[in-house]
Length: 307
Image (tube, rainbow, N blue to C red; front, side):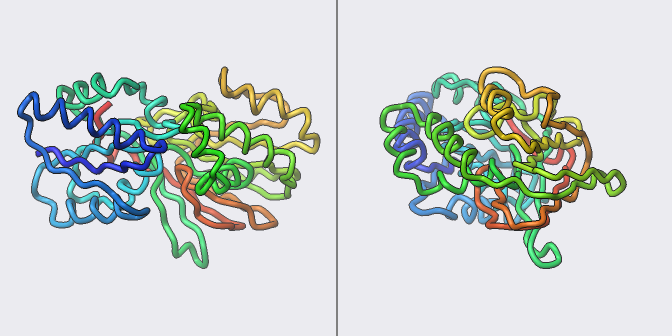
C-alpha cells in the first residue's frame, strides 16, 4: 500500500499543485493509496509515527513536500518497521532531491517511485542539550553556526514566501546567506573526530556534518559525501578574514567547495563539535535552537529509500 504524506503549503503551494497532479495520475492508473494532508508543522512526523508504530505491514510512505517535511517524517518513523520512503520534491531548496538526482518533474518522479526498488542509505543523528538529552535525525546535513543561522532565519521568512511565488525560492537562501555572513561573528572551538582526533579552530564561521553533498538550496559544501558509506563528511569553515572566504563559500552554488584556505573537510563516523559561544544549530534546515556542543553520528544503511 502507498501512503502519501502531503504538505500542501510547501514551496508556497507547490506541494498542493504537485499533489493534484499525482492524484490525477493515481486515479488514471487505478493505483490504490491513502493520503494525509498536513495542516500544521509537526503533523507529518506524527502521521509517520502512527503508520509505523506497530511494524509488521510492508508499507511505502511517499512524502510530497520540501526537505523540512521529509525531516519530520524521518524523525517520526519507527525504524523497527523498516518502511520504504519516497519523495516528490515540492519545497524551495530540495537539496535531498538534488543530491539523490531525483527527477524534478512530478510525473517522472511518481513513475520512478512506483516502478523502482528501494536502496538502503545512511541517516545521521544530532544530539544536543543537557547531557545530550535531545536527538534529531537528519538525512541531508546538520550544522552549527552560519549555515544554521541562515536556516533559522528562513523558517518563517516573508521574503522566502514572496520569492517562492515568483518560482525563485532558492534566491532566499542567497539573500539571507549574505546577510548572516556579514553579521556573524567567528568564534573559537574544536571538533573531535571518532573520539580520538581533536582539531582546534580560532575563527569558526560554521561546521556542518553531511550525509548528502548539498545543503542550503544547492550549495555543495560536502563534495565527497556518500549516503551509502556509513560516514559523515565534516566541513569546517574557519578564517580570521571573512572577505577572503566569500568567493569560496558562495561559489559552492556552482562548483564543489574544495580544500582551500580557511576550509577543511574530514571523514568520520561520529564527531563532537564545540564552540565557546552558543551558535544556531540545524538538522536538515530545522531548528535545534542555540548550542555550544553537538554530537553527530552516522547510522549506516538503515533507511530504505527509493531514488
